[in-house]
Each structure stands twice: as structure tokens, then as C-alpha cells.
Length: 237
Image (cartoon, rainbow, N blue to C red; front, side):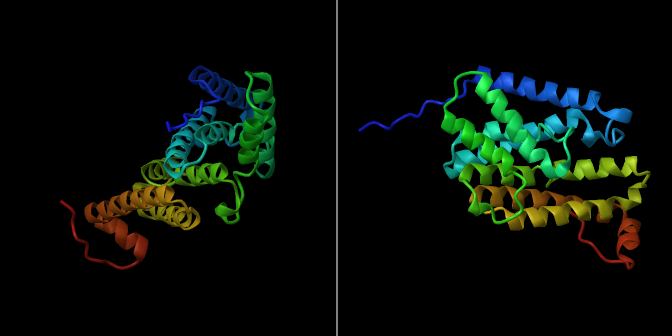
């Protein structure tokens, strides 16, 4: 008996059109904000940052879904729409608003199965769920885990260091800021449940730990300022 090949409901051309729609929606959200936009001086409240975050989550959600046996199309389309309302809706309702936008788009573009639309919208609506991720469908779990993981590792560290400049901090605060990434990463590692997500979380945490050690090894005064007492450090080759 041959292996049944499930046809994807989303063609690559359709997915590219979705991406274009999401970026244009984010851009319009920023342009329409009163007073120059919400915290526009922070780059992560720009359309460009938010779209880049979305694409990162799409990539991670695809990776997790493929490894864990979830519906990859549901996971990646939900990831694409999960933060579409982030810049024009209050934080506590942006997930529900994102699901509404996703539903309207999917029902008016293409001929997607009703079940597919429902699964995508439920994943978007629940992506901010704070409970046990295994209580939710696997595709929603993939999205939540991907969203958590994008804030961990090298990307999270770069963003936190960038934040230092906008807060007029000096490089001597870098160790403290990197520690925040470590704390966030540990929280993410505690929440994810799939083997794939756990592996990604621990690999990214390892990179942050190395960077923290390199900072301390090369700038000894940074560690004294942060910890209050000098320590010896093993220098990495």
C-alpha cells in the first residue's frame, strides 16, 4: 500500500500573498496611529520589526510542526497572522482581533476548507494563552512555542542590547540586560513541551550563556559592577 500524500490547502503563491497582506496591514496600522505611533522610538514597535518577528515565528512554527507531526499549513498560516493586530489593538485583545482579521482574509481569498479556517483562527485566538500548552491543539502549541522561542537566544540578546541605546544606558549594563534574556529563556524552556521546542530552547540558552561569559571575561569591571564582587572566570578559547 502506498503512502497517502496530503495535498496542501495553501499554495506557495497564496502564502506569499498572505505575507504581503500582513506587512501592508502592519504598515497601515503604524501610519494611522495618533501622535506618531505608540512608542515609535522603540524599533520593536515598528511594522518592520513586527513583521520580522512574525517571519521568525513562521519559520520556528514550521520546524516544530514538521518534527512533531502537526499540520504544517495550519501552524505556519496561524503564525503569519498571530500578531497582525499587535500595532492597532490593545495587548489583551490583539489575539482575538488577529483571529477576526485572519478569518475575513481566508474566507475572501482563495477556497480554503472551513475546517482549515477554523483551526487557523483558533490558533491565532489562543496564541497568548498562559496555561499548559498541551491543553490546546498541537498546531496552537507549535505557534505558542515558536512565539516564545523567538525572544530567546541571539535574536533576543541583540534586541535587548539595542534597547540599551534607546534607554541611554552604557555598555557596562550589558551583563544585566543579557541576564534578562537568560531569565526569559528559562521561562520559555519551562513552558514549552515538545521535544523539538525544548531542544531549540536549550541550544539558544547555551548561546546566551556563552555570550554572558565572554562579556565577563573581556570586561572584568562589568561583572564587578553587576554582581558587587570580583570573580574569577575561565576564559574561552
